Amino acid sequence: MSHSVKHAAIPGRLYIIGFGSIGQGVLPLVLKHLDITADRITIITADARGRDEAAHYQVDFQIRPLTRDNHRDILVPLLRKGDFVLNLSVDVSSLALVELCQEAGAFYLDTCIEPWVGGYTDPSLSPSLRSNYALREAALELKTRYPGGPTAVLTHGANPGLVSHFMKQALLNIAQDNGLDVAVPTTRDGWARLAQRLNIKTVHVAERDTQVADRPRERGEFVNTWSIDGFVSEGCQPAELGWGTHERHFPVDGQHHDFGSQAAIFLNRPGISTKVRTWTPMEGPFHGFLVTHNEAISIADYFTARNEDGSVAYRPTCHYAYHPCDDAITSIHEFVGKGYVQQERQRLLMTEIVDGIDELGVLLCGHEKGAYWYGSQLTVAEARELVPYNNATSLQVCATVLGGMVWALENPTQGPVEADEVSFERVMEIATPYLGPVVGVYTDWSPLDGRETLFPEDLDRDDAWQFKNVRVC
Image (tube, rainbow, N blue to C red; front, side, top):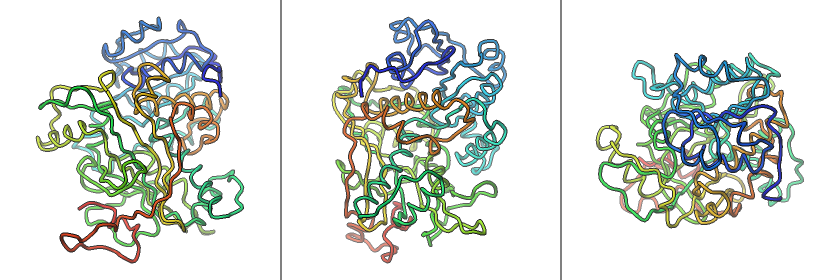
């Protein structure tokens, strides 16, 4: 595919809400691959970050923080039918913007479901109500209220987003490698039955970021390769995971929700303090953080197969397993050790990165061949060569944002949809040229490897893929 092809046209104006690392990284992709000129783009953001980048492309840049009280006053006079709202902000309610876009006839896309400021950590709310599960359930209600409305693509970055498309391609690859004659499923139930047939017990969204800067982290500083505010917010939410039908040891600190799909559970502890065992091809085995993400819930829900009476016949366990860059690890250690009080200084790594890879994919476990990782191995050098104002982490997000925008424009009356409902083939076609090597690798690793070498442990040796074996206690 040509790196300069125009995939689709935005009929009206594009409004980019928030202009941090992802906004800055996606703007050059939008101008290259969508039929829109800079004079029809407006950035509305909360601070001056990205002003120089916007000026470089001669794009209107407005510092106008959106709040619960003012967002309608600011946006309603602007939005017209055929406009596109690209929401890349933090602390701005995704659901409020989706509703506004449905009323105005405007397209919409975001990379996660954000609440208004404080919604992730509001102590007056129960852990269940400040979870991604609760935010997703509220978003699903919008689907029933706006059927056939302008397409609003929810949670469509790298993860959540791209990993849902990796999941489908990985299932097809495993089926082919096992000699199964399988047609590409065309329904949600068809995909669930394929996962069930292959005996996929657990899905890890397994990510290892090895990017390193020319200046190490200092005390009192939070360093990361993508939104620090976003990482801290989701890290302070309860750890959440889709809960599979093969599981037979419910966590002692686990809880079910008393509403919604029941596809997921949560732990009474923050994700940034919860670790799990996982594996990627280049890193091998490692411990990652079980940080809550929408895809852990949506994948478990989407790939649920049901009996005729509606009861659940099959569901995979699914969760994030994230090892950020090493400077972020020490930032987290300091942050947690200070009682979850965020450091006064932040440093988003971009131009100062000198080396490293973001290895992001899905690890499908329990099938006949053991475990299979499928995903992107993008180096920072290749990311910079492909698109300015990016590192390896941001470009994986930005390429998928572009793919989701194109799909929305090509399918304009779908109403609110999740990443799992978007064409994986179309998004992969658009995003893959920007993902570096996209590979599939089998492994005989399991979470039982190397256990009980120093002390006895409470393990389930009859089924390696039980969550109690995966969790680091």
